Structure formats: C-alpha cells, structure tokens
Length: 324
Image 1 (cartoon, rainbow, N blue to C red):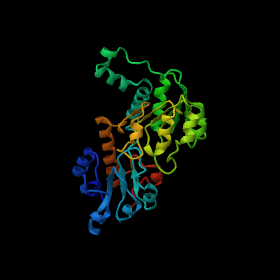
Image 2: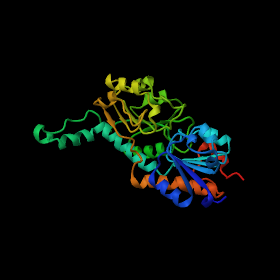
Image 3: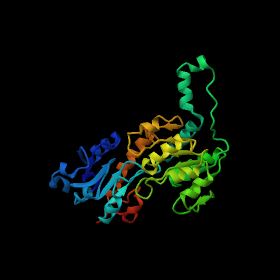
Image 4: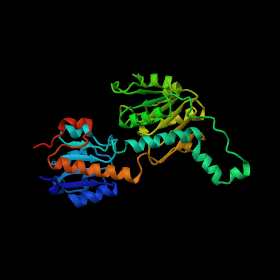
C-alpha cells in the first residue's frame, strides 16, 4: 500500500496543519474522540494510520486490525500506549528536536521571570504605580551565583544546559544513565542532585516512572533558597507538596509551564506570590508548531510508503521498517 492510498484517522482535536495535510495527502477520517464505538467495524478495518494529540489506549489500538502507525503530536507521548503498540508491530512516532530550541528558550525566560519578577514589574508599570509610588521594589532573587540542576538531560534538557552555561552557571544533572558526551556532574538519584543545587529544572517526560518524582523530600533537599522550574509534564510534580513548600518558604520560588490537570491550575497555586505561571506555551510559536505538524505527517507518509519512520519512539525503534 502506498501512502497516498492509505486511510488515516484523526481522533479528537489536532493542530490545523496536521489536519489540512492529512486531508490533502491521505484518505482522512475524523471522529470526535478516541472512542472506537464511534466507528463501525468495517470503517475501523480501513484505518492504517492514526494522527493524534490525545490519549490512545491499548483497547483503542486493538480496535483497528490493520493499524500500522500512530503519529503523536508532541515530544511527550505518554498518552499513547507505545509498549502495547510495539507488541502488535505498530509504529509510534513523536515530534522531538523541532521544538527543543523553542522550549529551551522559554525555559530560560521562565527562570528569569521567576527570579526577577518581570511580569509583575510590567504590571506595576502598566498600572501607573511607577509614577505614583516610585521604583519597583528590588527583587530578592537573582540568577547570579546560582547552581543549576537539570532533571532530564535529553534533547531539550541539553539545549537548556547549553544556554545556561553561557550565562556562566555551573550545571549538574540527573538521568537514569550517565551521558558520555557531557562533562557536567551526574547524580544517580534526584535527591542527590537537589541537595547540591539551588535551581532545579524539571524536563522529564510523564508516565509512571516520573509521577510526583518532585515531592516534599526533593523540595526540602532543594532548600529555602531553592527555585523549581517545570517545563516537562505536570505529573512529575507533587503539586500539594509544592504549594506547601512555597507557602511555608521551604523553597524560594517556582516557575511552571505545565500542570497536573491542565488547563485547571490549583487556586492555591495561583494565589501564591512567589510563583510565575504560564499556560503550557513552551513550544507555542507558529513556526515551531508548524514544524511539529509537518513531522507528524511526514512520519505517516514515510512509514505508510514502506520507508523508515523519521522519529520512532524508543519502544518502537526495533520496528523501524514497515512490516510486509
């Protein structure tokens, strides 16, 4: 089967460019949600590819007897049961690399906002308070003299590290295995990393292995001068523990772009004065999201045309040829 003759399913919402290209390049089918009951068995049998930005369960995967590839929009793919897909010989792809620089740039900006209170300072000016009350108060926190720990030194984590290294900051990191291509000190556990840094940047993917990895003990190890920045997945942070640590000044501040129950952000978190909050916008520029969309469709086209997938997820790397 050639890519042009393939039928690709879009369950739920997805980036407009993905939809436009799929409708132009494949036989496209859309349903309101990833619910197999919305399609007849005959319709499900025609599906060879899925493009998604939603949860894809093993049961949903099993409802499509001729499914060959699931192309997920985003670098994180914990919403897709990739392990199950791999057991069925189904390729799963994501969209790494094309968003690494954008997310790294945003992370540095979020860190500066958190430390130097730039959004608050702008609001102060816009409210006329500079004229009425004088200069904005000096910030108690600064980037100067800080030591950075990065939890997750993958593509994005390394891009963040390189940027902060240019600021003259020492970098430490924790990953499951030590990298051989960097000289930054490696820590074999997160608590050890948190105990030697005062700025912890969390950029690990979601999933059971990282759920609430940043808990009360890790925050305590970070200490009262500590700053937490989270740009990976909201599930990696124990939000009640973070709220308590911020309220009790067990850490100094936090900057968050991701949350456990998006778009719902805990009111207690929003009311804290020592946080900087963004609505999951780290990769949200037109150019980056278009590049992500193109990679979704290019993965579909390659795999369904019998060529290797461009960005197979690790669970499916061994399947990197379309089955005969």
